[in-house]
Image (tube, helix red, strand yellow):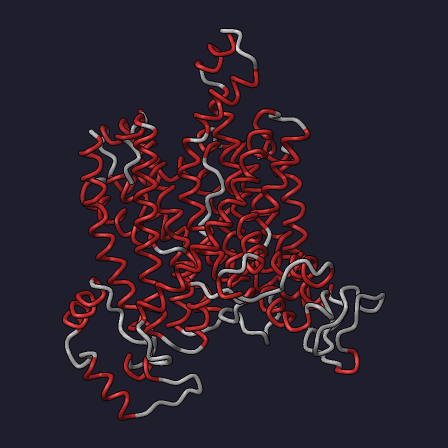
Amino acid sequence: MLNEYFIRRVLYLIPVLIFISFMSFSLIYIAPGDPAEIMMTSPSGGYDEAAVEAFRIAHGLDQPFYIQYFNWLKNAAVGDFGYSYMSEQSVFETVLNAFKNTLKLSVLALAIALVIAIPFGVVSALKHNTIVDDACRFGALLGVSMPNFWQAYLMIIFFSVIVHWLPASGFGHGTDIRYMILPAAVLGTGAAAVMMRMIRSSMLDVMGKEYIQTARGKGLSEKIVIIRHALKNALVPVITVIGLSIGFLLNGSVVVETIFGWSGIGNLVVDSILSHDYMMVQGSVLFVAVIFLLINFFVDLVYVWANPEIRYDKTS
Amino acid sequence: MIKLLKNRQIALSLIILGGLIFMAIFAGFLAPYDYTEKNLQNRLQPPSSHHLFGTDNLGRDILTMVMYGSRASLLVGFVVVSISLAIGVTLGVLAGYYGGWLDEIIMRLTDSFLAFPSMFLALAITAFLGQGMENMMLALVAVEWTVFARVARGSTLDVKTKGYVRASRWIGASNAYVMVKHVLPNIISPVLIMASLGIGNVILAAAGLSFLGLGVQPSTPEWGAMLNAGRTYFTTAPWLMLFPGLFIMITVLAFNYFGDGLRDALDQKMKNIELEGRF
């Protein structure tokens, strides 16, 4: 049964992959104007006629649309996203390096998020409908509603300007953890808010189940019931929550990395847009989409594996 | 309706939202100054009795800017969500009602849009379309419609199995009639809940794009753009960023709180669907 589910999920991936590649490729055609001119336009707005013509021929832009797409796809499939017109570096390599940095930040952010979300989510569910629950829920709502760029500046003002504990921004060669704490905390607290709400409702759900009553009936202490029985089962949906927060973290990385000067993929995309490096934008967006799609695919599989009940419904 | 208003959460969020909408509509009357009024001698003044929220780097009154700024944010939120709702609900109902290959195509299309982390898709579209408010709204619609398509499809599948829908089809009602008369009214509450949460998400995303300098341009008063302009002065004049950010948060919070309350009050089934907005 799992095999059949697996095969069907893999088959679903194919049209989606084709479509996202098509969307990424077509981006350049939604821009008003000639793709070669747009690609070759410098930040100052001018372009060199000869360079445009050379680009047009080099990229086969004189050929029909579907042939262009096919050629582009053929290259993209083997990791050839072309070269940045600005830095003349391989788009794929640049994107890959930036993504590694984003991954580092995301892992720390995810850890922060789980450390906050699990205890608060559980307490909120156990103290259901009390003032403690209300406070936790309101805190989470606040976390979801707070603009991350605003929170970033509030934290910089406090931790860097007032108490001087942490650097306001910078990359620190990507290894100095002091540069990671603030951006990861901004990303992590936002993600924690989303997670906490889910853990709470999943915990509430589990606490009402028969096996919890049974465990209680057996005379087990409340602590054991909660930790051994309820929490274990309530954490299954957390797998999905982690999947969802990957999206949240990636989205947040755009603004947060830009503010903190962290050389990740979000920062790369924003910089590339501002410097009109369209090859880089196209490559980054496709790369992020494929990674995000695959992460969600694996999260789904793990979720189904951990929770066989849902194998046959909710396929899409 | 009256029962809904008795819900404390819904009533409170409606009061706040009402206040914000009132402020946006009557900004011209309420604002103490003209938002175009620059006074360089008065630049970067901290909050005082003359300028409650202080003044910005061009000497403009921040309270005035914040009041006018609510127009852009609310407009973007309502317009983007309305268009997304129209597209998403239409596609979602068609997919759920007819099923088969139409469902497959629509849902794979939805999946493809969902494959992009929303901020990246919105950024990519604004990057290629060019900056500005209309293009930003278009980019946000491209991201937001999928939420409605999925909710509408799910709810339609549910409604389709109900006795009254089957009965209506047996007595020969046309598909279009069934969809408009029976399906739509019965999927409206989950759609409204998503719309309220969606407006909050869209306002947040729009502010983010404007903050990056890719949305509303700094010449128009808009909260995200104000935060962008205030970045340079955030250590010396933090009020430039404090107040617009606070208003973004209050507005988004009110929409989320409202959507949350609506969900608890209207839809038992949606209790477990948490705020999984696209942003």
